Length: 172
Ligand code: 5GP
Image 1 (cartoon, helix red, strand yellow):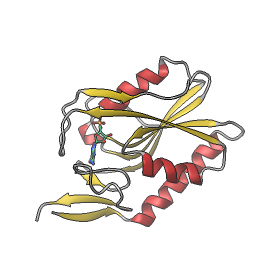
Image 2 (cartoon, rainbow, N blue to C red):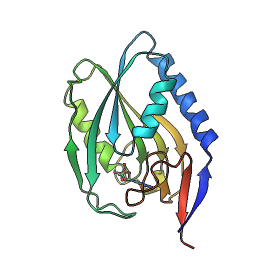
Image 3 (cartoon, protein in one colour):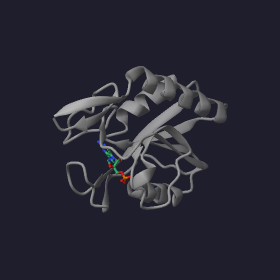
């Protein structure tokens, strides 16, 4: 197995800084709740939170789409809920990637039912070619082609999450 660099480390960091600046400007004077989706969001969320210049709180949800390898089945299971209430909070869901859109569609509905003060969605990567439900993120790091990517929290059978660049697995 070989991993080719799709987006170099510095490009990822620079883009996250731009997203952090945009969020800090939009929510200036407010406090926001960053909701990370485990496990994939942790590297992106950490970098984003550290680069933001406004107060942030963080909490996590976990969801898994059944199956392993590079294909998801489309059935999403929420395996961990938030620890705190989102009522009246400025919620920003932070996710590694939006692919079919099914995971974020479900999680967005769950959050909206709890009446946050506001709600937005920030994703590091967007693969619009594979979308199955209508879902548009408010902040997108990079739009990428239909390839299976790893790094910055994204895994292949739980490995490669720690790569500091976005890579594509190519079979040798
Ligand atoms: P969805 O299809 O519901 O939009 O995405 C579900 C999940 O599939 C994502 O949160 C992510 O964990 C995983 N996923 C989608 N595309 C990729 C990819 O290219 N690489 C990796 N490692 N995971 C992906």
